Length: 459
Image 1: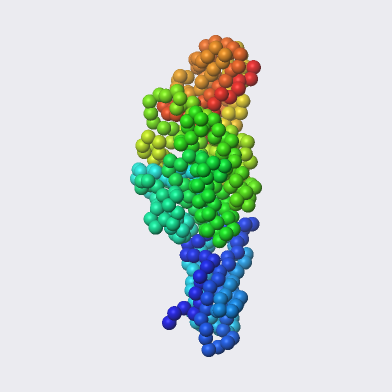
Image 2: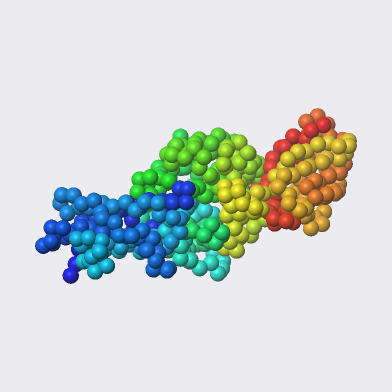
């Protein structure tokens, strides 16, 4: 016997709904069979899958001509997983033994995050790692089907939007680790929406330029949220394709335009953007490449200061599996860093999520420059690096000023230099495409210093 109630729209198995103030509404619609009893109605309820307890009791749907029905389950609490049940019968007292209808399984109410950017966002980790799928962390795939989230996330099998199809098989990404950390702390499901593409420049994501990946992202989010376009945040990791001198110089301005456009199209002027400052690229020393990568990283650092609810986490200390892609172990660390940043900054929890960043640089003696850092919870650790490997560089009107030695005192580093600074003094950190040395870090959080470029030294 065919089902007496057929759900045609509204929700699918494994779908995650964005909660707002701890609740969400789920609307469904479909068709029902004509029976001999004119009093028959469509009934809908919500059940918790883990405990088999009723979350919302049987409720009569709105039925209309053509055997069509609609129903909205309101104020569903963040959590799950849930299933929707339907049946056909005259009254609520008959519902337990009513004519059976469609079910929808494994749905949750939690937070949705859009994965955008290029290859390290799509995920190209190729080293073995234990990072299994977990029920309650679900993915809206390129096939536009909700499913259990697993690697590789940017899989193009049966894709219905080839615009972000990878040219090679992708691999491990940071975002399952990110979602696991959030789910275990927030105690509700996490949905991931993959829209990234390896090698994509910012112009593909900026509606003020080509914008084709931006347009695809907007369409995908609209489709998987039933037209609401409500999400908890954007996971953005991009920039390698914009490290030329020309593109890096304009990156910050173009990035700001993209952020503004996303917030307009997603109807949230405060939508968080969780970004990653670029890791390294392996290669021979190249001043032009160094300059482009340094400007790009500086733009990413400054964006987090100048744009409300844009946050940046470092990655320069993490290992690679080829010339430019993070290995799987690094992705696990990066996912946890991004989650800690979200918990700290968006959810206001007592979590060490913000990376150490330069606060000030002052000449305290003719041959001493004092650098102070924010977000140091314990002490800056350099592991005894010699001054030449510390990756600070000081320049003035006469050129490079040699750093002879240094002293660390919690959140302060005093750099002793070979001569007095003349004119406009500037200091940079890790301003190389390929930093060859250990990156100093906060011993409390384990987070390395953010790279910066040409920070003015006060006299």
